Amino acid sequence: MGRGGRVRAERASRFSALSGNLVVLIFTCAFGLTFVEVGLRVWMGIRSQAEPPLWETLMRPSPSLGVEHNPDVNVSISFPEHEQKRVCFRTNNQGLRQDGDSYYEKPEGCLRLLVLGDSHMDGVVNNEELFAARLEEFFRSNIEHGTRPRVQVLNAAVATYGPLQQLLWLRQYGILYRPDIVIVVFYVGNDIVNLLSETVPHLEEAAGNEFVLADYPIQPSLPPTGNDRGMVLAAKFFLERHLVSYRLMRDWVKRSPLGPVLATLGLADPEKATVNARQAAEAISPEGMGQSLTQAHLARTRPDEIAAAFRKCDRVLDWLGDEVGTVGAECLLVLLPTKQQVEPDDDQERTARVAHILSLERPDLRFDDVVSSQIRPMAERAGISVIDPLPEFRDHRATSGGRLYYKTDWHLNSAGHRLLGEIVGRYLVEFDLLAARRS
Image (cartoon, rainbow, N blue to C red; front, top):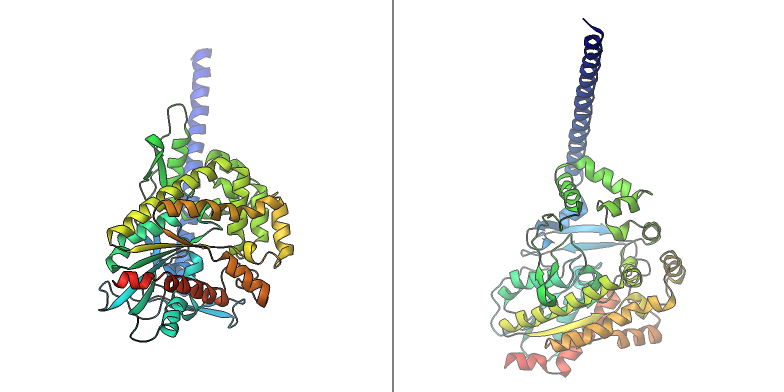
């Protein structure tokens, strides 16, 4: 064999050895990853059998809404800020957050009110303390028997829902109840920013400044030619859907200094990837406080996205007014203020710390007022009546000194739900909406 032949033989031998080692490495890695994945699934399965996650007890997936309440839930949840130190979360036969079964057929001679909202109306209180229950109690206590019809208040609020999901729930379930009045409780602290999330049913911008409902569940698609981010999103979607190990590793890495890098690649949520946002998240616990301040942070750092969210909200309110009108009902929007608007003197130290982390100036902390001022005319243009309880909330704080929100959690407490029920009840009586619906 000549010199050239020996060289080729040596190269072939080295290539063969390298290929063999590479195959062994690939199979070893694949076996290791498979072993880890199977182990994680077994461990998580055993853990879930021993103690099901609270969220899975309360909620179930919905192909059209993202999530919805499980029916017939009855669970006691530790909550130190409540006077009983615990909250009993109960849903009825149709998954509504209230005691007593409900049915689509309306009782004879009954006026039915349907409440839509987010975690504030879903509530961090017991069922009998919720706004919907307080509103029904108001009518039982303040209207003489026989002079007014019976008023039934159904609580269809679901934690995590934003305005669009509330509209979709109304279309899917709400109209079946044939409500006389639909009460939408709009939380100014995060209902705008909720319209930016693409991990739940959401809107996409179409031609002519119009919005259309995006396909859900989300299917990643290729962006315009010349951008390969669509392939990254497709890979991300596949891994999230099929690998527990990927999801756990992703969550760990997103909290690490690599978070911003992943956000650039599209593998992490941008709003959770910055160092400031991570530090703020550590200071905000539970999440109620973060809803308002995070929205203010996005308004400061991403004004174009917030402007788009306002446009989406305008469209959703138009659809909402039309949808309620199809069943001949009245629509009422309640602008639920934030703790920062009502009780700015409470929890000041933590608020200042988080505001500093997020680089929020004093004007930024008044973004909730901006939301209220913009939502009211949108709703009124859509033919929706508006109640702003902020003045009465502030009067209550000034005169009694008592809290209407939890100090740490920032959700409405029992007193807040009661006062809101009284305010809305008086409004309905004063403007004789109940009599109008009865006629």
